[in-house]
Amino acid sequence: MKKNNVSKEIKRITDPIYNKFLQEASKNRVSVGFKPINNKNKVFSYKWQPHNNRLYFTFSKENFNPNRPPQPTLKKYKRSVNKLLNIKYKYKSVNYKKEHLYTDFMFCTIRVKKNQILITDKHLGKQWIRLEGTNKEIRKMMDDVAAEILSYSKKVLKTFIDLHGGKTDYNLIKYWCVSGIHGVDFLDDLPDDMFFHDTYGKKVYKKKAEIYTIPAAKNIITNNAISNVSEEIANELSEIKGSMTETLIPLNKSIVSLTNQINLHLEVMRNINKGIKNLNNSVSNLKKITPQDLINKINSPEDYKKYQSQIKELDTKQLKEFSKLFIDKFKL
Image 1: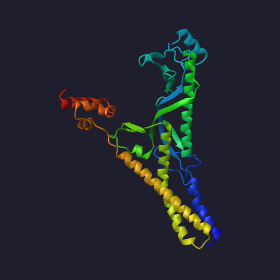
Image 2 (image 1 turned 45 degrees about the vertical axis):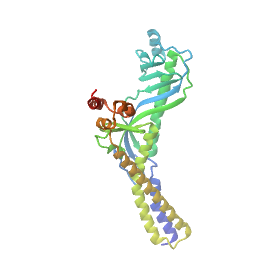
Image 3 (image 1 turned 180 degrees about the vertical axis):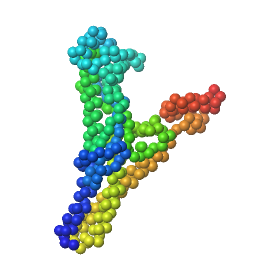
Image 4 (image 1 turned 90 degrees about the vertical axis):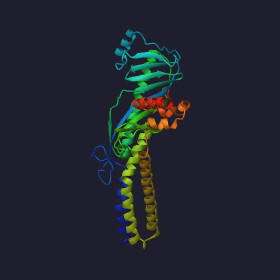
């Protein structure tokens, strides 16, 4: 085989491998539950439910009046400035009158703290958003939704300050949300009766796992994409390695160097696949805490305080069961 022909053969085989990895989107789309469209473009599909969006901003109570303005003032503002304002929004003081809580304010809940203001944005509700495209496109779609939520929350904040006073620089301190996701293999495969609360997410519904924060949700989706293509790429690189061993040994050092690079990529992809499989196994080994487990750990009524954090994770039905077991055990 001539050198030029070998170079063309290498290019023909390797180009699709490195170009395929989540570049341009195909016009075709797939339903939830990953399946690639072709060898060049990896197109994925997920359902994403960002909700309980909590955005924290700096806030000064300078010239702040917590009470609702008079109804005529609210009507005039709604008519001339902001038609989204619900003039029947509710207000009450909380935390021993140190904080102020407003509900149904432009589809949001607002909490004024000491030097911060928390806006819980609900204007998107709990709708499921379909994400379709390459991994890069999907991450951009998620960023666009987050930017929309931030933009809307700033409008809410401006309207609130117009009506109640106070000052802010509109700089976001913290953004926290819960993301329901369908289409990620190892999350969708979790058993219906498995429930957990973790640092990065929770599963409190039979058919849905939820991830905390949008960056974490994006990473989960990216890891899922890598998991689905890593084995295929590793197999193709193995074939190239075998072919090159037989046909390219007599050629110059530059081609031998390419063989070494392919071996390196092959090992990296295998390690990625192994790491993701270990993650799946770790999630699968999660075990829900039962009331009986907690009772077995508590040796005296005073031990109750040691396990308060675990007790808080129990749902209403489990709390009732725990209370009965606790009373029976210590004859209260």
